Length: 120
Image 1 (cartoon, rainbow, N blue to C red):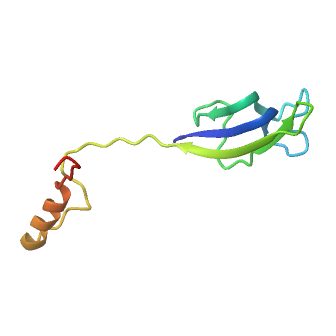
Image 2: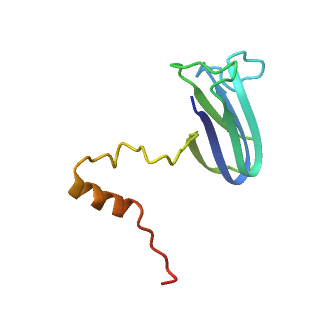
């Protein structure tokens, strides 16, 4: 499985981010359902969660609570990303270009290995 990244870009103010399994108590002090938390002072706060984490469960609802801990309002943008690990082996056995017909096969191979440069 791939990792997840919960990212909040904080333009102004300070933000504390909590993630838990109970929407009523997430972020409360001493709450056993609050699993992960991060604090930021402007900039980017990232919460990286690996699917191999002992607290991570598949098919579970997770609730995010963002709290402004500064005197002024916080201006933020929040994103949820999935970090995908991609492995590519260039062994010429791709399924996309597997056309056995001679006439079309040469055209596909020409398109596959055609490179353009701006220095020509």
